Length: 116
Image (tube, rainbow, N blue to C red):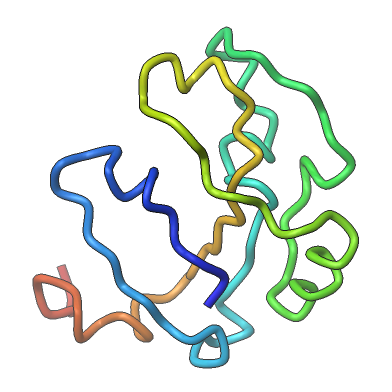
């Protein structure tokens, strides 16, 4: 587990947490951005928010690169403080994992997967 964010968990009333071991995620269906994808993909300025480009932005990494990225850039720390004005603060506090398959989490989804 990379860690948890008490701050992010409190961002909305209906947030839930699901903790999965990284080794249980299929490497062919897992990627990550450093930090969250909204910041990493350079979308922040489109919304008039402060943005400072970093060397790890505009990249999507594969799961096997996680240790190398953390070694080079460090492990982000959770946001301190409340929610007032948080969108104006730097958002470099996350590593966002993208899971491109429902299979590893299917048993926790509210409806069974199937043709829709």
